[in-house]
Length: 497
Image 1 (cartoon, rainbow, N blue to C red):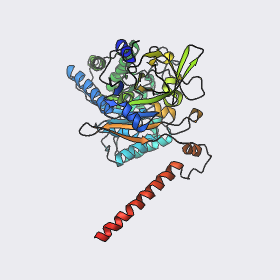
Image 2 (cartoon, rainbow, N blue to C red; image 1 turned 45 degrees about the horizontal axis):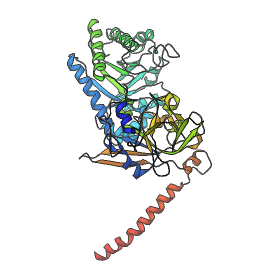
Image 3 (tube, rainbow, N blue to C red; image 1 turned 180 degrees about the horizontal axis):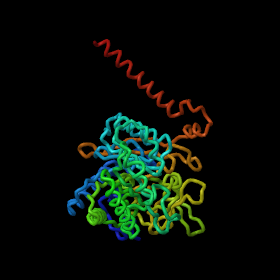
Image 4 (cartoon, helix red, strand yellow; image 1 turned 90 degrees about the vertical axis):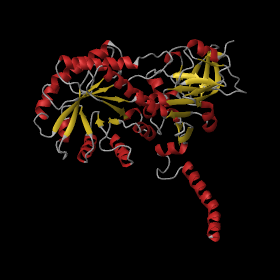
């Protein structure tokens, strides 16, 4: 019988730049996953930080190539959409590349302040503030403006501008989000977010044009499906650009567009997407419409979230049991949950690259994957994958089997409620950060241990919320013991001196 390795190589173009096999074990970006598993155990989430920088550099190169090809006179600015992953290690890795930020909530602003305090950003960094804004959000935006931060509030409704009337900053640069039409198969015709095309000119004339304080600098374009080579995408982009040209003729301050809705990431080995061709066509279309209308081309901003961080993530599980149901459905039970730890796979039927981590020389069989919760929907099989699932056959008494889901770095922690209460009280798994030092050597560190019962009991109100948990007590005891062990050494050094 053929091996699992034979199956993958015959079915897909494998190995790839990201995935290869050595000694029957899978490597992800040349990271030996079995070494990580032996050190930390499972279930675990993994973030490979260099992938974030790789994608930022790639996007910049795409736009640089396109702008050079068409002699485009505007500039390109890369923004990271914080809602894709708010973790500090993600933001710090991205900001090493001198990028800019896009926010969507009032609680993003304290995060911005922390980054500024730690000198990860400065006041020249663009902070594009999107989303429907409640009073606390606009208050925080106003405070940043008063302190001289480079903030661009993107108006989402006609009344929002009133929140910035009392800002003491001499000039407030504004953006306007346009309410685009949703794709044809969506439940609604027009996006609930943004301002209608028919209201934009009047908003500019009545509240911005003669205000003396406000300047309209940016139009914001967002398509929920992302940048796709589809008639729907090109139609909406063209409609948006014609509105830009119309408004630019009466608003000389307007000089930028923000293309929201990012580029896709690889979620299967069948994934095909010509990134350079898409960016070329975007730049060419923008320039052609502007030339046709005799207006200068705009500076282009993008706010890539999933594209920045998605392919840096992986989730590793151990198969803890094999169950044959109805004499035909073989289940591999994992030591985690899809509902709680990969919520997009459950809620949206999202596909991910799924591969065995070890036993690549073993024969294979068709399986279904089952999670630990009591919910019948906690599974991953052909309905949520591009093809039948096959994994190595293994002897449970003598062999361990591990599996990995890859390119899971965007949204899963926030959608799952990181560090909170999950279905059936399934704990949040440990999270391991993988990086490379200046010499290219792999480094790992534990960002967060697996959630324990003490944390859950506090959240649920069973224990005093200010009382230390078991892990904190053990850490304090370890620190005290270490101090006692060091004390004789310190006393000896004093005597010698």
